[in-house]
Length: 422
Image 1 (cartoon, rainbow, N blue to C red):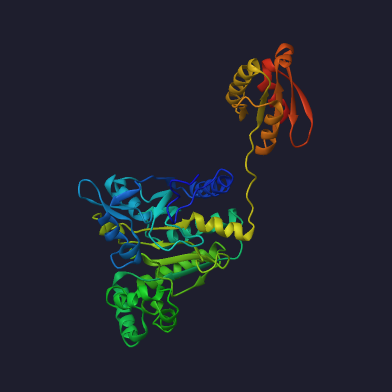
Image 2 (cartoon, rainbow, N blue to C red; image 1 turned 180 degrees about the horizontal axis):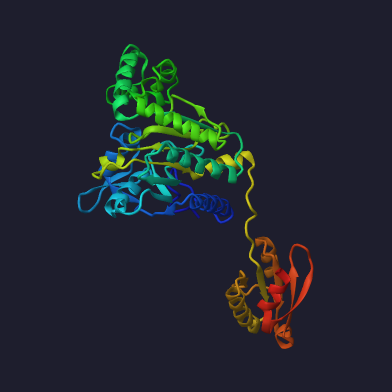
């Protein structure tokens, strides 16, 4: 029988046999964020298109090539979120969080959507863990955000991960850098790809991020942004480095990091790995001091990062990282006969109210078939309940791993089970 349809290209199902890994990672990242004072925020999956055009930037690949944009029934242009920061910033403004105690520190686990070529660790529907810190100007905040990322990777026991940092300055010093880049690339524009020729006039820094080998070779000799920083931006970056060093966080300065979104200013950073092929960036972020103002609010220095969940899982699987074992169902009740099915339903309810996971036969299969099913799904304990057990108010609980057996009263089955598992 042929399937009516399949999953859309670039999307992936998270199956029950794998979901425990995802849940483990999600639990770790949210717990670590909580330790740093971040609280969860949830924003809509779609926003008005102009939000992303203003925040992410009209010259970026995300806006020009990758967004899922459509007109709704009211002829309004709507876009599925391609990243999490813009929606969080909009929520910060719209809900007047700027009037509350600053900085406002929020985090989220969210799905994002970009129309790009699917490959290992990169999907069209993907998931991000992100943090945003609104209203923090000090370079201490930059180091704090990076420290949170480092703590997450340490907690997950990620190996051979490298932190790269850079500063792309403020609009004032960056304008000088743009002039230097234009002069450099104009002299070599015959070798640039068509996309980078367009970037040359709109945002020459984006050429530094081009994946074309030819453009990358040309960009290797381009002026370095750190040579064009104003005094304030240079001092800020120096203090970020000092704070990272004071916390024992190793880093390398990579002047080619520009990040793919226009809202970044000053500090930018990436955690990169060689264990996931060409798509080596697992986590990236930085400061975006002008974003809130760009969206209509008061000047609010802010910063954050996003961590790709699929890339992180790919990295962990490639490295053979630790995952806790998938939780197994505590008890499977094997019913023998109609009366036993009723009794099993009653006991299962009592077990669940006592905090245990408990299931029982739903298909009226033979005891042998039920035992085979219990073994296949890997339950921890089983108990056979039939007319004899009901009459004697007694059942035998079997440990499916160790083989040990325990006596239990049906009238206090959950209590007896609790003593076994203490």
